[in-house]
Image (tube, rainbow, N blue to C red; front, top):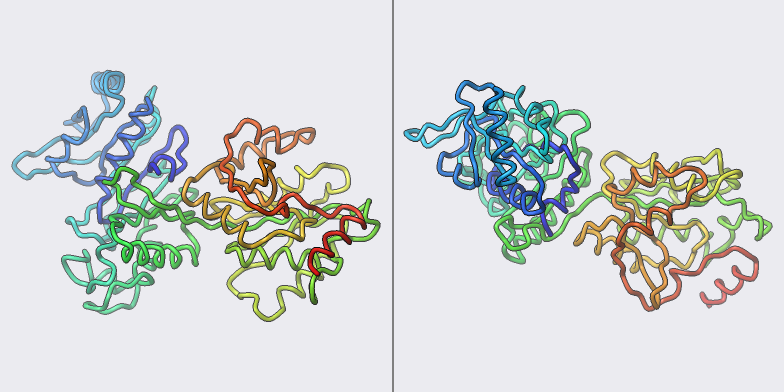
Length: 462
């Protein structure tokens, strides 16, 4: 997977790379990807860049006086027209082997130049060590930054907290309570990468934080990286975590992100005659209780159920489900009421649910509250396919027919939320290529609308 795909970049993004373990390489790799797609991209630094790395860009413009004059502006635009990618620095000191960075005020000026799709910024240094904590004066991140990428080289995992594996050991110890010489564990690494004074330091409010665990080359390193990602996603602050090796043909192997489950259970059950969501299902369960437990088994990070016609009954049943033994305390289960459930279509419940999801959610796994035959294994396969592809839509299919649950990448949410009342989610889905997971069970197609549907579905349990 490309970095561009993993980061889900739009137009006008300002991406800051911080940390250690390959951030310069990652920045230039992303620039190459964008330029290859015909997009104009500017790379720069707000600290210092090795002079030898200037050659990694096809063109370089030097702002010796630190200002973006009309002449320099024209030079940058000409370079972008010819090469699609230009590096902009203040100047280059060959004796010190350093290229000087720009002031923060210049970053938005560069982003506003015509034809610029993205500005990529190296915002701190690590003295070529894979793991670090920032000093008091860094990172230098512009307020206009939209994405912050804390980078770590996974070769530091399992090594002692000391040089050459870690930069500014004393600051890492201060942030985590660790002692110099302790092993760099996935938990310790995650605490630094996600700390407001660590990998998230100076990230502007609203900027997406997506760490990159880089240089994953062996199964053991992949396992340690996955552990670190799980630790990162267990706390707040990070939208997703990229795992990969930016020098490889496919720089991102997997993207792990928070995927809450969104269950639409606002229907009035008019054809059933009674609230179908709380009908018995299995041993000691109801339909809605069974659905949320299957989605929990699938790995959903949070559960949000949209209620409507049977609000009180559904809320009571979910409260009982949450209180039962075996429900992990760290996985929230909550409800949100759709006040328009009686007058509007399912789209309104989807929109209410999407707005209720946490800002860190990278995607939403949407299930229907009247499909009790949902299977954890299928839901898990849908999530895993999304993690490997970052497709805007991922769904299961049975003999070519689409079913549920459907996973919507966060990149598609604005289009879904912008749909008018008279529209359907299909109006968006018909325009977006979907990643499909073929399954051998027709359970993904079966819902319970009538008493006959319900009795047939229950008979399958016997």
